[in-house]
Length: 516
Image 1 (tube, one colour):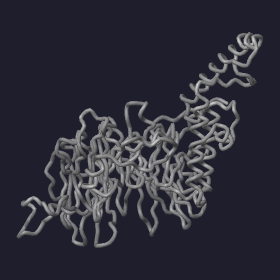
Image 2: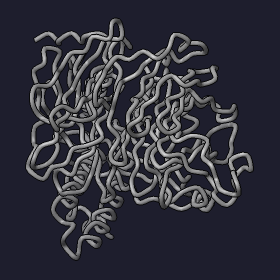
Image 3: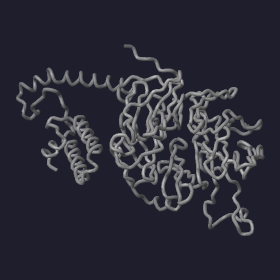
Image 4: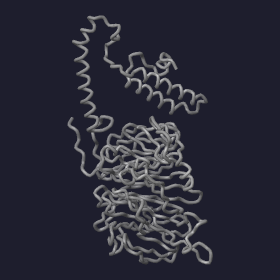
């Protein structure tokens, strides 16, 4: 595409600098994604827009744009050159200084240059409504904030606080109907889309790292692939299966094939969820198979100890969480053999496979090398509990139905974890109790601590590790509760409505309001 045509497509002039070109391209791209996908000519228009962007961007290389400078150096007379030296250079210096100060303010406060916001003790959740589902937040006083822009048919899901607690990211079909990543400032109630593309994005996860430079990087799944998402630059990169090239731009997550693809196809059909492992050099994932799921440890290609993906367990349903050191805890509901055609003889009785347990919770070391340790398991109506480093022993029995284990959640410091003990009578699992205890050898010698009774699910820790929020089903609807570990006293947060996936803001200290 010639340069004149490219400028006409983007609507920029010959003096447009790189920032102006990028801004015009992003605006047109968002407009095209929002309104043009039903147009048969959509692919052609998108390709034309990309070509125009690349042509105009190449034209800006090396250009210094100064307001009022209409002549090039080659065209300027000598007097103009002298005037430039007297006036233009100081202007450029001032602009650089001002821009540097703006950049510092932007970096030290927020990526949009906005002031930090105080979300300490806030609990975000998804409210299920007759016309869809909406992301909301509860203040410490119990008052509710509803995210702006919700309409019937909107389905908000998969909320994830940014590590600093300043913003909340979630997946939603707002806008053009595609599930993209959105960001919400619950204090100012500002909602903005932060990705583009057709593939549904879900299961956003930041996790924690000591390296501040890596805290902007989240993971999400789309189309059976795992992507790394930089929420500051709004760019994506395919991580799993490892791609032959990076996926650049604001979310053009099409998925690429590599030599590792064949290896992963032997394990499962696609990725369901993903969370960072040790030093972000590995990723814990759940992959789906035809009738069950598989927990997989994945060393990344950037890892100096490169290795192949390691499948651990198979079950009908797998939930997991990761600790700050990269280790993981996983619950297996409905044990399945990894390879039904190659079962260890010790699990065969009269030639028929015998599962070692129905459900179980395991602790998995961060390196992916040391053997996992079972914490508890169920066999029919018997619940066996031991904790890390202890042999599980039966601690409880029920006659009606079978026990079920789910929803493991690690505390922020990795010192404790919680899970849900439930019961199944052939239908959906009904919660019985929320259990928490220290995640260390001998930490459960006194028995598991029950901090919430009833049909509970979806626990999430406070950043201080002294409280847990969760949902409890009451009269057909799920209410949000908070329980203190000390004493196990629980308090109802929501009043009316049906909620799921509550999550504490990770802010530990309140953020001071900026001076007016």
